[in-house]
Length: 331
Ligand SMILES: Nc1ncnc2c1ncn2[C@@H]1O[C@H](COP(=O)(O)OP(=O)(O)OP(=O)(O)O)[C@@H](O)[C@H]1O
Ligand SMILES: [Mg+2]
Image 1 (cartoon, rainbow, N blue to C red):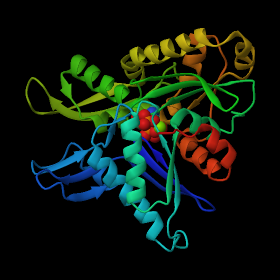
Image 2: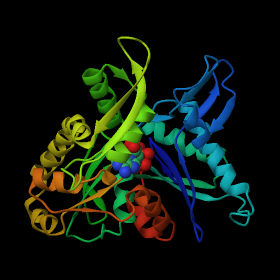
Image 3: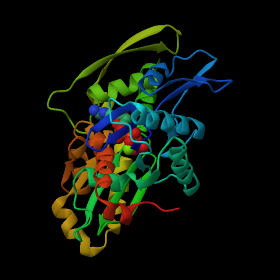
């Protein structure tokens, strides 16, 4: 399972990815009674009446709402585990969960406990960048070293992995969510137009880029005019959105450069040969590979299907106990 800030994915041995939903929970404010989980809850974001709240259980790579996290975990475990059509009922499944590396030890234990309470026989936790590297089929056990950057919703995780361990790791709270926020503020400042974060995310996905596009694009957004209070429509161009996103990309590049500077000399040659591997949804931003390559003077490659690297890595670990035992988080 990939318990991400933006998306939760579940991989079942022999079946592949069976669940792929936004990490979102909608519930009644007073009683905390659950109303929806996953995409149904995400659709309610920014649209809920006063009595209902739509929450993101994880934010900035840490658990922001513990009850919601447990509810979501419980729901997906039961859903997979009880639906005989997806897998023949396994009485007590074994679980491997990829979690952001910023999650505290207390929270980790709580996540593992929640999984056990939801019916798991055992729950092992692995760090997201390690799971992503394994899912990207990188040789994490070799001595050559791999350099992975996972740009998710809440965090960008940068790691250098060699001999089955994280040699260097850095986690920054600047990723997809901040890109959305940057678009919201850009549009507010330039056009006095208030748009919601879901709209900003659509803009980012449809016309966002980190490097000039062969053919620039545009996207029409509707929001509220801050001066008149009335609805207004604005045509945004990919050039503008690139300008809005550039401070975020500069920040991510800066963290990558700082990490490169700390790479032990024995590893730097091999890492330069293979290049930086990008995973996570942020890797899908158009031209991000070119932008990071230009900033770091390193080759950059995008992992295949970057949104599923972590969960596929967890799937590989289900079949490889010796590697799992080497890398799983303890405590
Ligand atoms: N085509 C795209 N262009 C730019 N960003 C994208 C694209 N597709 C998805 N994203 C962004 O990727 C992010 C989600 O990525 P991902 O599912 O890897 O995050 P996560 O694993 O849930 O979060 P984290 O790893 O921080 O806990 C979202 O911010 C989403 O807007
Ligand atoms: Mg992630």
